[in-house]
Length: 478
Image 1 (cartoon, helix red, strand yellow):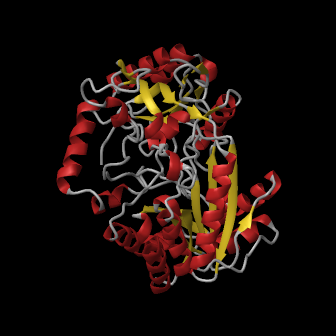
Image 2 (cartoon, helix red, strand yellow):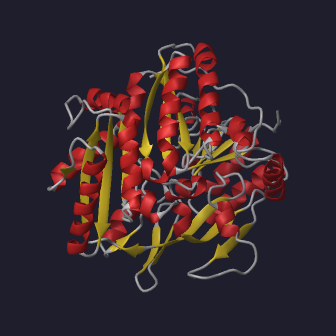
């Protein structure tokens, strides 16, 4: 286990000189808030938290930490689901929440420049006013930040058509662990000069450098949208429906699957019945485009395809209110699962045609290990969120009961040609499983990249690559 130097009063004083005393956090209640994200009930405690307002301030903070061997954990909104923003070795939490400016919207080149603390939904709404679209849409887009999205290479329901965050990042400004500042890319559609450092940083989970500015690609905002819900009386038929949609050569904007246990959790969370709540599985499908007639033709074809494979019904959301109703089940599931019991979420991803095999296998694993499971997710790109649950309140007991099931689920996913995380990241929660989907040569290469950027291992230690970390603080399950 790595060791680092502590944060002394002298270090706190130096941080106050860099960012101002009002933006240095040292009180216990606030520090504990900076020691959590949305990853189950994991809790750590930083020694200090800082809220810089500029690249220059971040550069000075990193130079200070580098000189004194103090670990730094970058943090956006704290909405992550893999422990990527948890200060597992204490030290400094560096929040980018004050760096929240949309610096430029370039309508001629269809690009925008933003700081890392910009909330994703705010960016989407702002560019939509100009008829533009930034597609990546994590479930937490109303609170998550662009910097965190870049760190995790975030996805969301519309990635099936539009791609992940990486597909929209054209240039970055970033601060190295020693405080050096560098830039990658530019307002360019093509740029193959040297190694692609832009894409190296995207998805690196804040372990290589801290992003302080991003240039993002935009596209024209689709003019029309259609949403349909198709319930099925068995899981296999629903899976055939997913394959049939693709075989129809129509690319949906979103294609989600919610199986029965998840539907039941949503009903309980929402406190009301939902359409076809008795179904074994539901497919939620969205089409969009700029030509209404063409879109409606695709809609008719998709409806026919789903009915032909055995859908019980195909419900069209013919009003915005109905559209929100159909999406409400899928969008509430993150919170709905939390209300059920103590849980661990496995962010599995497999080839789309292997989704039925994954869901069947998960049910068998849950039965074998005598635990509950709730599965749902992005069927269109094979990214299924498998939640395993137990009513045991003691952390050690939960770990003992859930861990064998989690490992079996990841082995199932990787055995189907998949991976241990599709969009949530590895963080500290999944690092022990990374070798299931990456061979020893790849693991060594990743370690070499980490060592080249951060030879002291100070930036977001304990994340991505397998590392022994201290146990979390005791926190009662909520």
